Amino acid sequence: MRPEHLEQDAQVVLDSVQLDGMVVMKIIKHCRERHNGTVTGQLLGLDVDGCLEITNCFPLPQSNKHDDGSSITMYQMDMLRSLRDVNADHNTVGWYQSARHGSFITQSLIETQFDYQKKLGEKCVVLIHDLSSTEKGNFNIRAYRLSKNFMRVFRHRDFTTANMRKLGINCQTIFDELPVKVSNSTLAEVLLDELDTTERPITSDLSRLELADSSRIERAIESLTEGIEDWHHDQGQWLYWLRGAQRDTQRIQQAMQKRKAENKERAAAGMPLLPDEPDDLPRVLPEPSRLDQMLTAHQMLTYSKQMENISGTNITRLYTTKAVQK
Image 1 (tube, rainbow, N blue to C red):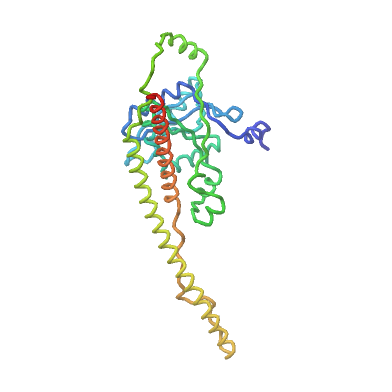
Image 2 (tube, helix red, strand yellow):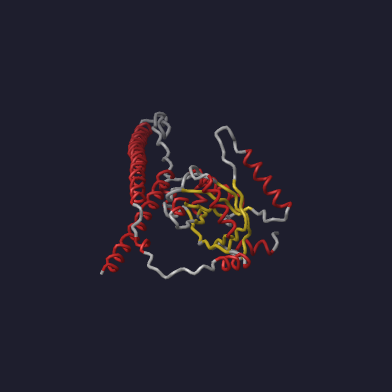
């Protein structure tokens, strides 16, 4: 039997993520140092009454095509062993990855998060830090975990239309997003308060009314256009399979009916019956995976939300500017 405290801990649902200020600074620093590529790192902390408190992290080295992943695994083990030796938090609770312009969902990310949740359970997350948004002055870090139904489908790699419809899997139910809050120690709060002693003059900051850079909208439109093309390509392949499957199914039914009629005639004539299935019976090809198309749809949804946010902010600023001019 499992201990009572483990049973109670398993019943607690993870509903939020709390980041230590030091963790935020480490992630930002790591992502900015390798801004031209994607970086990853390990998250350390503890689950406390449904809140995942992330208190430390460390970067992971870049992998290469000649590495099978064993060197990164050894590096992780050495880092965790060193942290344990100095009595620092060494409980793995997830990982983080950098992203740009909201583009982060790939099969590689999903496979990595699936492995984490398979080993650690549902109380582990992946933090996505959007570097392009932070460079514009808008700190952006989000916490995700794979949904239960998606974990079930991904475990068996059964991304068929019927199975996905049965479990309610679509591009919006791949991840569960958890709210993120940043927390600092009391001493850090006091230090920040003491450092912020300058008196700022009360002036009009009209720079806040400037419209967002048009390149962001252009980039989102270009990415959305590419996503639409990829989605139509995948949809065309699936429709090609569907037409072939319907044609083969019809041929099978016709062959079975023909064989049934032949056996009926042979039975009436006292002749031995033939096998129910003819030897040359066509085979229906299995349905191709819908995972790629679903990931493309999720990215299209992300780009659409980006355009909506940028356009909404610009429209608000335009109306505000018009009111100020009056």
